[in-house]
Amino acid sequence: MASSAPSSSLLLLLLLLIVLLAAAATASSPNRNGYVHLRFYNHERILGSGPNATVVYSVHRTSSSSVSGFGNVYVYDNLLRAGVETDSPIIGRNQGMGVGSSMAENSGLTNFQLVFTAGEYNGSSLALQGLFPVAPLGTLFERAITGGTGKFRLARGYLLTSEVHATNTTLTGQLDAYISFR
Ligand SMILES: *[C@@H]1O[C@H](CO)[C@@H](O)[C@H](O)[C@H]1NC(C)=O
Ligand SMILES: *[C@@H]1O[C@H](CO)[C@@H](O)[C@H](O)[C@H]1NC(C)=O
Ligand SMILES: *[C@@H]1O[C@H](CO)[C@@H](O)[C@H](O)[C@H]1NC(C)=O
Image (cartoon, rainbow, N blue to C red; front, top):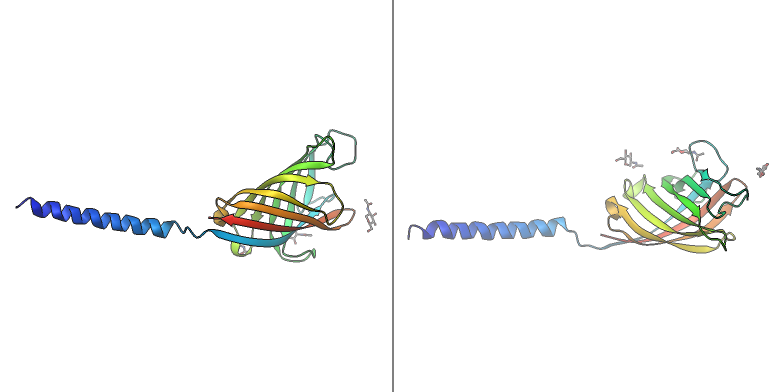
């Protein structure tokens, strides 16, 4: 009988441990599948110089003036703003690269990161890729959200883009991100 007391208290301890582990697992996996639609604006300064919104050509292998000439590589760091106005609040940056990737059409493959620096998603980012067509203003096109960091871990979704304003040195796009995340 002397041995039954320790073994039953061991059993109790094990049960307690299992209950605690189950509680911890529930607390640490929110399993609330997030979904959000965000709208913001990409401010690109095509021929600018200086720190903001600048497209840098790394490789420009044709003499054509076309941005997306086949084989051209360009790198950019654009500002994301809450609105289309050039003084609306900055909410992040769009950093990435594009490669002229179509022999037949004027389009490029883009690979980029949207890094949020303000608001609820400050510090989180989205990873994206997809075709960027050279098309008239207002043309709607779609790229894939393939991942994310921070609050956007395991993100999946799509980004709709429409260029809404252009001057000879700037291009402003409306971005609608539809994001599912953990
Ligand atoms: C340049 O970027 C900084 C922040 O990175 C911002 O404060 C400033 O307003 C920007 N300037 C322009 C002209 O967009
Ligand atoms: C965003 O987060 C950084 C780092 O935590 C912080 O320094 C910064 O003030 C935040 N920006 C805004 C606009 O909340
Ligand atoms: C861009 O347009 C402005 C007028 O809006 C003009 O003054 C300037 O010369 C143009 N620049 C180029 C490079 O065409």
